[in-house]
Length: 419
Ligand code: RNT
Ligand code: ZN
Image (cartoon, rainbow, N blue to C red; front, top):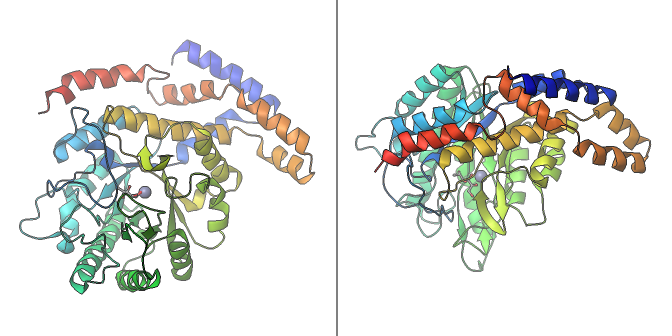
């Protein structure tokens, strides 16, 4: 253990103790929170099935060298990133990341064996896996539609794909003995004003009902549905809106996925967590960073990330919330982006764990808003960074900016040699 980091921690511990906060306990709590890291940042959502370009109204810009080109490279890169991120982690997979060739089958015929390479890897890494059907980047994504398509051939293709994914998520959860969150997001929408907003929603509901009829165990798998406000090329109408999916999740008692980039610029998912959890059993978060319109920038330690973490901790939401990251940026080193985004999320959680919860609740219930403002402001400058560094060091991970050397070395030795 680095002496300076230890000394700084001991000073921080004393300071926090004065306001009734136990830093050791906060670190223990942080250790228990699993963050699901999105595999798709490693190769700009390309996957291993085809070289079709990304569609579905989402875009990855940039051409930073060294993206993973196959399973081995992606696993290697994730392992590198994980070595720089302490604490519990999971990996979030999209269905296009098969671990062995499909040999003539299309994605409506996926089976768990197509992901066995990941399941075995997850066992070795001692992590859980999450899963997503991939309803884009495929020729059957037609006229901006998948599950809500008016073309029965298209709609039923995507229903088969999603049913196969539900089955796979169930198998993953069983094999790993760790619940797999399978999240359904579809890009369905319209560029220009629809004549009717209703018909496509009825078709989406019909498709979802068919998908939910797939046998699966709620112990092995949580199904979640993800709403969106608009996508590129679908600016005027999104079938799976927030109201649609929240209603659907409540009615069917499945998870709702709140993506930080899928709402109006002045609307925050942090304020939705407590309400949603009153009506759905579990929540999935796509922690992301919107900039003007839906663009998934690398998560940073900004106000909304802190508010999300505060909601989770202050409102006892952690035990029913799955934290997933969702960003893709091809202009910077992809491994660094994983480390930065995941560490930022951990920092926000730790900062929230380091609040004197009971006292702040009491102050608030006494309607002593002056004291609440004073204390929350003062806490912002408390030495939580020293506590986080101690967390890193005690897990044998390099603290402050020192981890970046590893990434630079890896870029030089490995990434720069990829074609
Ligand atoms: C798209 C959604 C969705 C995707 C991933 C790749 O707007 O946020 O979650 O980012 O499935
Ligand atoms: Zn998302």
